[in-house]
Length: 400
Image (cartoon, rainbow, N blue to C red; front, side, top):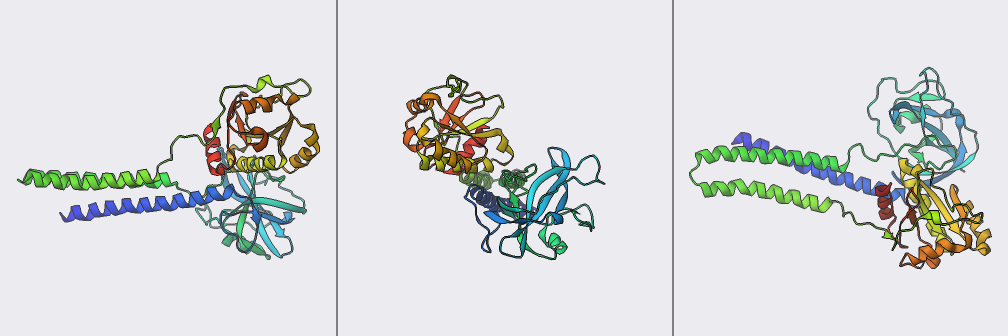
């Protein structure tokens, strides 16, 4: 009995602890996902971990750091940290420009030269822990230095200048960025914690069954024993259902609206009587048809933010803006300059906008919503104005 009470209590408490840890990880990941889709704010003393910010300043290419032993797609390499002196301050902030391959030999470091010029960098703030290191010598002597850790407490000792208490992980749209690696806000997902919780609860139930089975053989009052047997099972079952129902996915419902009927973009031509858009690159398309400058600007901005938020899948999607009203051409050209890497396509005679309008319940001419085209040129869905960007991102991740 003492053995049963001790281990049953231990297993049950460990299960509850893992559930609590799972909730904490859920909150961390939710906060991270909320932040990456926000408009970047100017970096300040009030900025905190996982905030999306903008930093303006000058590169200091003579003091770059390689973070060693970083594996990307099975290839050994380095993360590259380049300091920026923040404008109108003496403070430096390290910018994670991305990953670079180690090359043929560890004796020769890759070239990561960068001009000491003014730059504006958007990205996510992080504060890495020390983590597991492979050597007691955490960092080399000469610049550019090679470090076994990204921890700022270690790195700050290498600088005479004051370092910010965060590292800025640059968006992959940065001109001087290297290979982008997806930010992982937590080493263990909430689902894994919940999985461990189920294992502990299962062991608790198994121990209860064993104890009651032994008692069943000895006890004459079978009804009383049956109550003892069912009570812990019922408690654990209801508890598990509570947690599962409280934290299960919201469902498979699409957040976008499917077009009324199927249509393919192969039927549309541009002003040169060529195909309106090519799909040989195998990419999905986030599109907007520009008829209203202010509305389309909102969609273009959201398209860029969603593209960045896709992280490693950023290059599986391209952004395309369609138009046909030549009277808006000057304003459209100015608008597109604000959103680099957005392809601008002239829809001959405005055929596409009429097909879009015919196959949707939304006023396409007035609202200029984001719509999705698959890699084969088939129109898939559109998103009503005001749809939560997190829900749009969720649909994109499912699609691609």
